[in-house]
Image 1 (cartoon, rainbow, N blue to C red):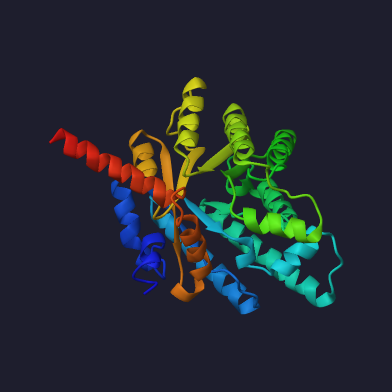
Image 2 (cartoon, rainbow, N blue to C red):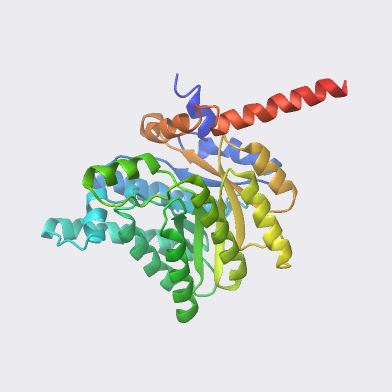
Length: 335
């Protein structure tokens, strides 16, 4: 039942090969695909190594397919969330934990060595705030190593966090001083309820913005920051917000930068916001869809999040249904 409904809507298939028909369909509208092995909640080394193997497979696939411009991986897909948290807190690791952490870092290195050999760009997905410092440290390490002439390694900034714009500014200044390119994917965020609940239960200030207006303000400021410093940066603008896409277009035009500049991509999730994706591609922008895949039972956490996001009338599906209804009314009027 899941495979015939929400899986079909939001995932490309269970394997890379099963995703090919969706990749070809997107390519007909000049929309690219980013293969995302969306397996979560694993805790064993064998699982982490399996995710590593599949991630390397997606890089090989990207190299041989023009419409797959990026690879991507989730840090907790190739390492223990508990270890990321301990490293983020600068806590001492036991000998066993130290070995496991070294294995995790080795997986990161394997991915980026392969990406560098193939010259395929890779995005590192974001995580919860309490493990993000370790992710930021590792991503910066590999940016310094591989982003010397262009951006190969991209971190993710969640702008619904009130500290991320300043963090972006600090990494940009570091990139300018040290001479590497700062690759970043900007999103609004994915863990708001969880972050606020944890902060309240543990008695520390919430890392989340006070309201949506503040998130939008920082998101827009991040777009402006990137376009103004594009010689030192590269960006994937991850958004389902039409106004954000319009702001990117306006900022590029004001800076006399072509919409097709390869340092600037916009991205949406597969199964959502097709009207934004295909219209942006038709305007000449570099557009990509995150195309999740994996065994049905293993991508259920991802699917649950998509279902929760789309159940209310204020959600993405509600907005898209409204647009469809408007178009039906318009066509009836024309008749």
